[in-house]
Amino acid sequence: MTVNFMKNLFSIVFLLLIGCSASKNTNFLELDYPVNFKVIKRAEWGSISIDKSYKTHEIEYITIHHGGVEFTDQENASQHVKNLQNWSRSEKKWIDIPYHFMIDLEGNIYEARPINIPGDTNTEYDPTNHVLIEVMGNYEIQELSDTQLKSMIDLTKYLMGRFEVSVEKVKTHKDYSSMTVCPGKNIYKFFEDGTIYEALQEK
Image (tube, rainbow, N blue to C red; front, top):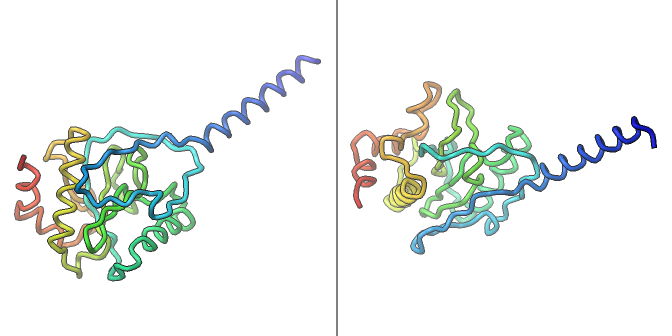
């Protein structure tokens, strides 16, 4: 065999290995939730596996979002999550749903993007190192229920403990961006009046 042939063969094998490792890169961080959490895992709502290579990050912040589109179809909440995944991949060309968790109208928590993969946003802030929690719906016009508020606080407190995030690093999308009102005035008011921060500081 010639030297050039061996070089070419080595290059082809190397590229194939890179391609295989990227497509099988499924080193997702799986969390162990408290038994009282109503968490619907990715496999349970029918998430499509990620087949692209991705970067990972270390969690330092927790950031609250809303969907920005009115949502009232609780019976089809799982389908709503699937639809967002399809739209995120096909239309936005993102690797997955932009958020790490989604909360429905009854306070159920859905695992979305794997937590160790940075999220995405349509605005100017960089969500790297942030856990993104989205409440389904538009909270400029919808009201947040007590059940949703409790789920949001409970999930945030769990993540604060799991990743050693201080209460000062729990904020909302609009705190990092001048381009949005997210998570909507009917969620943001609980940050403004101290309700959420007081709850997060309770042991």
